[in-house]
Length: 131
Image (cartoon, rainbow, N blue to C red):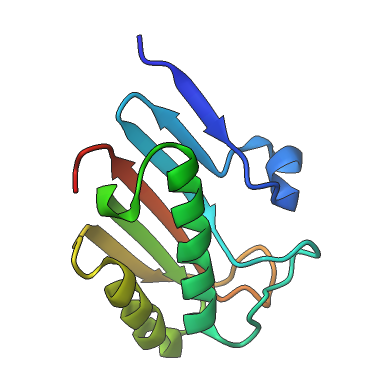
């Protein structure tokens, strides 16, 4: 049986909702949907989807590192944007950060996220040694 390791980033909703930033099981790491929300729940980069995406991928990288993984181990990303005009900036940041890795990826437009200033949410799955 594989051991389970929960990783917390201290986000305000982790305790309330009952989830972890990431969960490591065996050689896999699953990173929860991540935004660039600050302590007050609002975006650090309001009205800047590219800035949010970059901050999100930094948070994701830190969670992966905590679990013994790197961005090179990413095998799947799921990106959610609330505005059609943000597809380009978010895609560009994803390409800059993960273009060499080329994970399986999905990007969809959604009606909204938990807080209106949040424009982007990204989920990541990684597998140790995939890079």
